[in-house]
Image 1 (tube, one colour):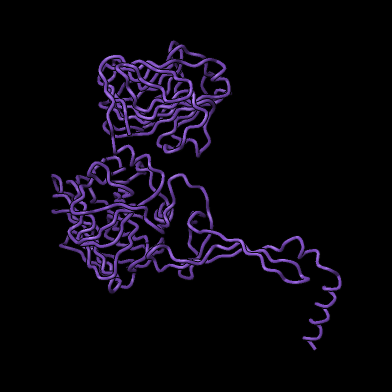
Image 2 (cartoon, one colour; image 1 turned 90 degrees about the vertical axis):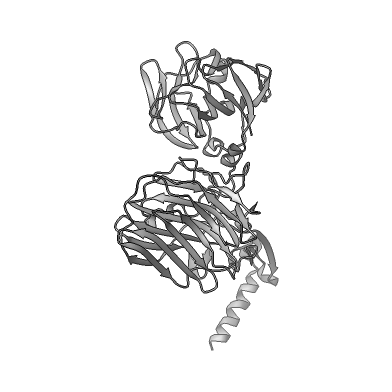
Length: 492
């Protein structure tokens, strides 16, 4: 995706909007990556609203002495989707990565001859996918990956000299002041992707190498991922390097899951048999809290709990790195590492959802739905991207029961004879309508979820909903009489 990297002391002036364009509400959305700490992101003009990044990463939307505050919204060097909405009645809100971060009442928005992005006094910002939109947005339209509707202007990183080109229908081209350039950023394509996918390991040398991880896991650690391992493998799914190592191994051949980590009293080893299934998608989560309680969750169900020694105290300096998928064959999606242990409620809240990347206590978050510029992108707050080694490829995660970030469609299903405690996307299950004639009784219409297999997975599903057609409710009286006669004869 193309972005405009505005250097320190640079800015972009874009044409303003009229009272008629703001009277029904107004929204401004953009992806922002600050180069330093603090500075105006945009302002409306004389007496209008001003959006400022504070030195502590908070965002303030100011109008005169009034302000809305979204604390901890941004981090230097990290891409964040920021949306500000103004309703016709004066209600205003700030959304960070699609989630409401602050709201309140401000003076109604008026006209302005121009809007300035960045500022000569700011340290510089990279800006992408800037949209000016009529009216406030619905939840789906507010998603960072949503297609723009009701565009007043749309700036997609196109520079012609110093002219910032508007890709929208009204051609409201802006002007770059100071230094800046248009560049391609593959990382942003990954962050904008709304749909889940998976990285495929086809050969044993394939691996994702982690950079040195400085996070303090003394208070506990949890690792979770969607995996579809092949039968004959004994891989290391996840590993943090020395000195405070933490390893999760899988043995699909006998279903064994093995956890090894540096504890205060040596190395702790936990073995959980019969939980890893070969050749089908399953969600695995291993959690060790600060007191040494190890819990293993499979498909959002607690399958093992064991008290072991607490994790070793954090040591100075970074670990030597780590790996994802060492000697692994199969597919992995949505691998997350959390600072601190996870409860069953924590796991159930997010196991079927693609994470945003800014959830509290999230240390690492690899969506693994693509590989960008030679990296597996960490969508978490630290942006510790992993380097693919070997011949790793990525695919669409055929059959992966992971909901896209803003997919609100739901349906209850049964898996392995158990009712899942969350809902899966309706889109996972194709439907077919079957009509069966019942003679004088009318027609039975059945709308069924087709029984089938999710790719190479052995999982099977089926569900059905049957509704009588209008003709069946209006069957002839003679037919009803014959039915009662047959029923009475049967009883005799």
